[in-house]
Amino acid sequence: MSESSEEEVKERDHTIIDAPKDCFGYRFFSREEAEDHGEILKGKNKDYSGFYYFGTVMTKEQVEKHVDNPDTLLSNMRINNWDRVVKTRLGNFQPFNRDKDVILTNV
Image (cartoon, rainbow, N blue to C red; front, top):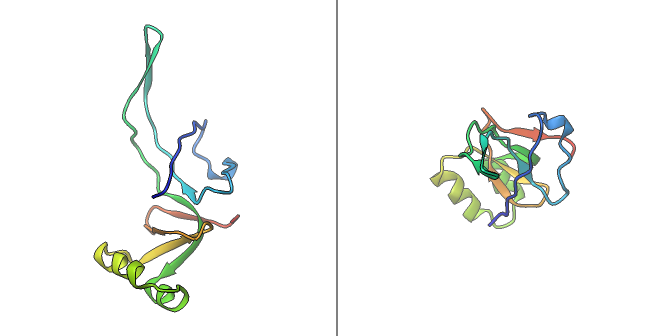
């Protein structure tokens, strides 16, 4: 199970994000906040970006060839209809949405 955390950023610019070395990826979202009698009220997260991953995209064929004991990953790819996954710089695998997700080259 991956841990997650939130950090406020002033703008959605992946070129200025200084992600920690133990971060395999991140995404942006919006949330409205309001103050009521000194209490900060936070709305629901919305307007999600794709994921920005530190890693390498792999097809099913590449997983078969380059991953030790790939059966579970390949099964997950088939069941979830993923044609590609990202092997992150931490060694875990995440689904890759080629329409929204971005691979960062400064791994």
